[in-house]
Length: 233
Image 1 (cartoon, rainbow, N blue to C red):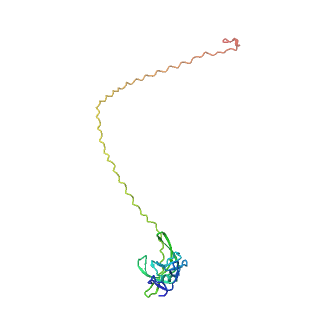
Image 2: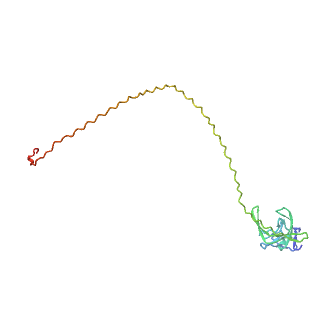
Image 3: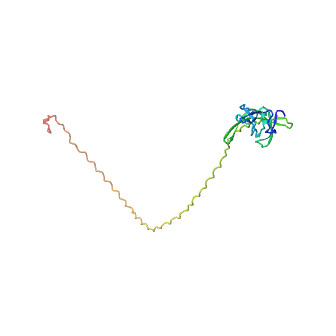
């Protein structure tokens, strides 16, 4: 298959096209290409390819699989690589895929000293068919839209059972006290009331006859006399 580097290549194998660069210890380092993040040199190391500028670009792994020097050189040249045995995190099944490098993405993980930020290729994944032809990976399903949460159903709470009614203590009728027998007293006979004799009507005295009017003395004429001559002057 053209322009696809197989994952079965020996990881310690140095590509023929790779160049060597001297270091401070006068040992030869195999240069695999140029770092896509900082344009530094990517060399083959003891634990896999790495950027000598230490910019944080991760090139030695893809989807948890170690990459050989030949595969990293192909990625740096913009070529696709064939990676075998990638394990799906969703199903746990292994599958083979063809990875094509794209833009660079940032990722983080928690290390021994806290949060670590690194960079890596963002791959386009496709799958080889039975004839060795490359098949594009199906477009990822759209992210499910969040379903609006409906208000929780409020169920009616059962009414509390009524408190048991305490029966009132029985009230028994008190026996009636016997009435003391009073000695019988003979009532005194009522005094006999005798009718009073009817008083005979006393005739009213006859009225006294009215006195006869007094006979006045006959009036007489008094002569016109001087005052000094009147008999009663």
